[in-house]
Image 1 (cartoon, one colour):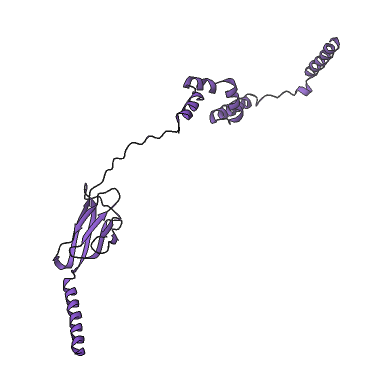
Image 2 (cartoon, rainbow, N blue to C red):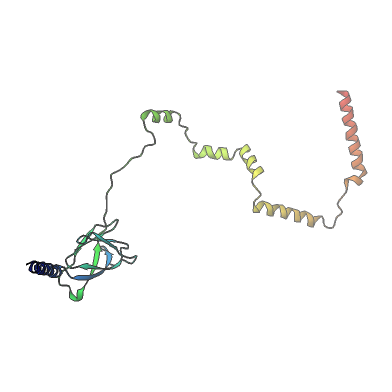
Length: 213
């Protein structure tokens, strides 16, 4: 009796295994290309592909929009990507040569966000305080007057280097003076007796003026 019960249990397990194999859906190689619905020449790269019928198995298209993975017949495949509406594809049954190829066209998704206004003041009191202490900027005429004032120009002349035109003018003047005086003798004031007499007279006049005061 125990032997017959054991044989019956083995036959039951064998029938269940055969039934499970018969009910299991065939495998299919699912391949395709993900493109933009507005233009089939524009690919959509790195699209997330989820098999909702098989434990949410996750796949991904490459940078050229191409994908290929193994799935079952009648599996529900979901394509999602940021900026596009999701697309759902069901693999048909009885696929030819156990492969299924499809071009996935994804529609760009436009999301209209509400208008957000950002204010730099948290309260009206802070706004009133900043408004009362607000310093009005000078207009263009006042800025030009400040930039062309004598003090501003003097400060600019003391700090800014000479430009190319000023350097060229100075070199031209030096070359002109050198050409004019190349055949003449440059006088030395230390050897001029008239200059010495003028200097002594100026010193004497200076001493007299100090004594008179």
